[in-house]
Length: 122
Image 1 (tube, rainbow, N blue to C red):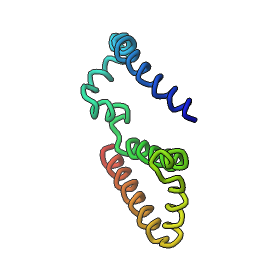
Image 2: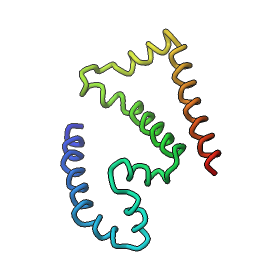
Image 3: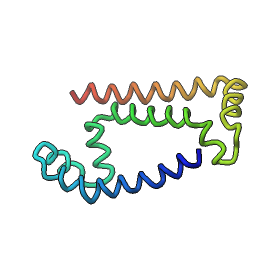
Image 4: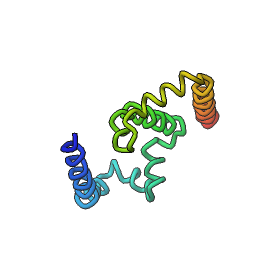
């Protein structure tokens, strides 16, 4: 497992550097991508452009990230220093299921608000 983490830590910065130094200038000159790069000046502008300027898509990405983070909780917990973190979270939700209801109600409210906003803009 440590070999995989070390591999990722060594490869990801190299890929970012190759993109920034070599691939991005080439993509910037392609006419099909010029409008994208014109809209995406800063970091948040790039995020907004990648989401297609849609709050609904952005919220989908956020939920996907949260779901991926929860799926990786077993692997991340030892690094944080608590090997049975997932069991503690599960026990907390089983002992007080109203918490899960509040979380899901909040997710639903944000999803509905994002979708209504998208519908009103169309």
